Structure formats: C-alpha cells, structure tokens
Length: 344
Image (cartoon, rainbow, N blue to C red; front, side):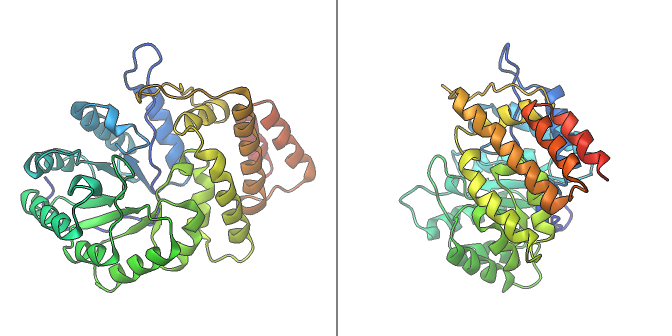
C-alpha cells in the first residue's frame, strides 16, 4: 500500500488499453501486450489505463486483473503512469481489500462509480460508501471512472468537488459527453485549489472543449486507433487551424471507431500497426467484422494518415503523400511509417 502523498498524474493521453488474447485458448497474450505497450508509449501516451472496460475487465478473474496490471506496470518501467480498476462489486469491505492489493501495483486504483451505489440510490448513499472505501484503503491514490456497465452513473459536479477535497482522488475518466456538465465539473474541481485531481475526458467529440476549459487530457477508445492524433491535440488544442481540423476528424471518425468495439480496434491494430494482435475476445459472442466494415477501417486508417500528415507532421512533397496512401492500400503500415520517416 502506498504511504506517500498522492502525486498529480501527467497531462495527456491515458488510452483505455485493450487486452490481446491467444486464439488457441483465450489466455492473455503477453508478448503481444508488450508490443502494444511499446506502441502506446512511442505514440506519445503519457499514461496507460489497464484493467478497464476496453480490457474486458468484467471477463477476466481477479488474479488476471492483478497479473495484467503488474505486467503493464513492469513493462512501462516508469516511462508512463499506470492506473487500473479495482472495484468490481460486492461489500465495500471486499472491494477495499482488492483496492489495497491493486494499490501495491499501480499509480492509482480506479473506482468504478457504479459499484458504490445501486442505480436507484442517490449520491448521499454513494458518498457514504465512498468514504467507507477511503477509510479502509489507507493512503492508496484513487481514481474515478464513470463506466457505462453494468449501468451508467455520472457524478454531479458537487460530488466530484467532494472527491477532489479528499486529496485522495488523482484520476477521473469522465463519460457524461456533454459540454455543460463538463464545464460544471471542471469548475467545481478547480475551486478546491491545491488538489492532485486530474480530469480526463473520455468523449472525443468534446475533447478540445474540455482542454480549453482546463481539462487535463483524454482517456478514450480512439487512443487504441491513433493515439498520435489525440496526443497532438492534447498538446496543441489552442492552435486555431490544426486543432479545429483534427477535432473535426476525430469527432466524425468516432462513428467507425465505436462500431463493434473492441473487435474493431484489434482488427485495426492487426492490419495497420504490425502488432500481430488477434481479434479474439473474452466477452461472450463477440461480433465479427464483414468485408464492408473492414473496408471502413481501411478508409479510417487512410484518413488518419492524411490528417497526421497535414496537422502533426506535414509531408514535404506530393510524391511522399501519394506513397503513404499507396502503402495504406497495400495494408503495409510499416511501409507507411518508413515513407513518413523519409519525409523528414
């Protein structure tokens, strides 16, 4: 268990990590996970959110949750921060015991807010249970995740302010997806003053807005497709031209990203990033992608490369730009990277 005061997490992108599984037996594919971690870090991510819904956290055991978090933490080796979920239902005492175990591994243990009160219970009940969890977990740094399953509970600004005042919560993944509540929450947290609480938006359509209102970064699913783009936006959100163009692309592209996720993310990474990742999932009856849907992923990659060249790393010649697009058609992402690197 951590005994040091909670430290503020870095600003930027905390991708909701997907978990690679072996085709043969469905076990966690750790060699491919290692490649994925290196890819996230090389793409500019400042943190990693392991053991989350994208990781299929509800379909792995407690032992696997701890092992997965430990592996990510060890592989990251201090280069980026690592957070992981630690509350999966049951009595608060049992949840607290698991938080302590996870707290010995990661930089912050993320509380699934829908696990501290029933769907019909109000925030008074939630705060009582949250305080009990705080009392039972010493000084373990905590986070919050408004996870949409098993039901979607969004915390109001007043409750988020209370969390910030405890000085224990240092990570918040917000999923309200509305500019009004986002602004209210950020204002409430900032009113606390000296707090390590950081606000990470999960909704890419409102990402630039939240950054402009002093949000701290992004923790959403499209960081499993093009973390380079969201990392760039988090750093350059005030750029009048590039940021607007990039935000527009991310908002529209999310319609493809969300479809049959996380199968879509695994297929995308397998086709274009050379990670050798399988589309195998633990979730029962995962959907399969048909030819039309695969073509949409191919088009998404082509558009992402075009936006990358225009906003993040402008290509010096039309010839090189054409070579990039031809590489996409051939589905050889390594060639795309070579073409992009040769342009500099």
